[in-house]
Image 1: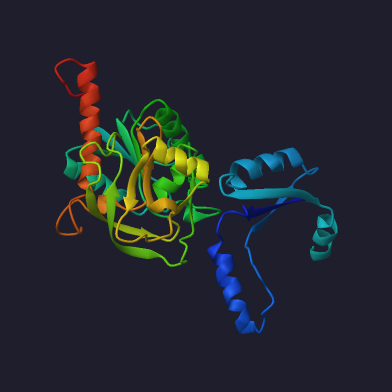
Image 2: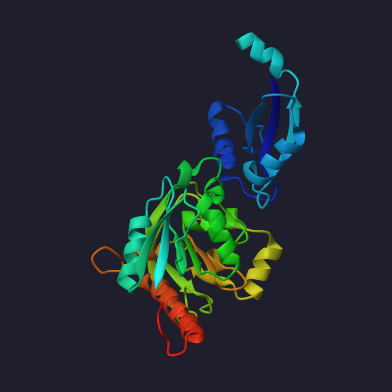
Amino acid sequence: MARVVVDVMLKPEILDPQGQAVANALPRLGVSDVSSVRIGRRIEIEFAGEPDLDTARDIADKLLANPVIEDFSIRVDESAGDAAQMSA
Amino acid sequence: MRIGVVTFPGSLDDGDAARAVRIAGGEAVRLWHGDADIHGVDAVVLPGGFSYGDALRCGAIARFAPVMETIADAARGGLPVLGICNGFQILCEAHLLPGALTRNQHLHFRNRDQHLRVGTTSTAWTNVFTEGEEILIPVKNGEGCFVADERTLDELEGEGRVVARYARGNPNGSQRDIAAITNAAGNVVGIMPHPEHAVEALTGPSLDGLGFFTSALRHLAGAAGGQLTGGATR
C-alpha cells in the first residue's frame, strides 16, 4: 500500500468563517485560551504501486487545491502499509 | 440565435435558464456535461445548482467535464459564456475568470431579492443596460463570497471588468461588493445572483434579468450583421 497524504489549507490571508465559528464555540466547552482556528482538508491518495509524488502533486495542483485561495502540502505516509495490514 | 444551456449532475436552474433564453427570443439548446459536442451553439449559459454535489469545492469537478473542455476553448476564442451562481464558480475554477467564490462570510445560505448596480455594459451579456442602473434579481447561495488578491481586484476595477455590484446590502461578504465580473474580452461573464429567475412578472421580483439574455442576442445579431451583410441570421 502506497499512500500519499495531501493537506489543503486556505491561504492565511483568506478569511475562514467556518474556523471562526468553531473558535467562537470553544468557550462553551470551557476553553478560553485559543486565539484562532482554521479548517483545512486532508486527502489520502492510495497508489497501486510505489507512491508517485509527482503525480500526487499534479492532482493536488489541478484538482484538490484551488491555488487562488488555498495552499497544499504533500507527503508519503510511511505508516500506511502497517495500518492497512492491521485493519485487514 | 441558438444559446446552449449545460446540464451537469446537480444542476438546478438549467430549466429556468433555457426558459429565459426562449422568453428573450432565442432558441435554447440543452447541452449535456458528458458530451464534448456543443452542437454549434452561438453562446452558452452555465446554470446554477450544485454540480457534482459541490464535492471538493463548488465547480471543481464540473471544470473537468467533457463539455467544459470544449466550452473553455471556445470561450478563449470569443464564444459568449454566462455563468450564473454555480456557473460562476465553475468559470473561476476553470480559470476563465479570476478569483474564487467562498463560503458566505456569515455562514448562512442567503436567499432574497437583491438590488445590484450595473457596472460595465460593454460585455456580451450586459449591453442593453445603462452603466450605474440599479436592477433587482434574486440571489440564493451559500458560497457566493467573491475573493481575489488586492492586485486582481484593482485590475478588475481599473479595467472596467466589474459587471455588477451588490447595492443596498452585501448578501455574502464579497470583496468590494462584487456580484459579477467579466474577462478582458467581455465575452465571459460570471454572476452570483440569478437573472434567469427575473424574466416574468408571475415568478420574479422584476423583469430585469431578461436584459442579460437579450444582450447576448443583440451581441450575436451584431456579430452576425458584421459578418453577413444585410444582418442575415444564421
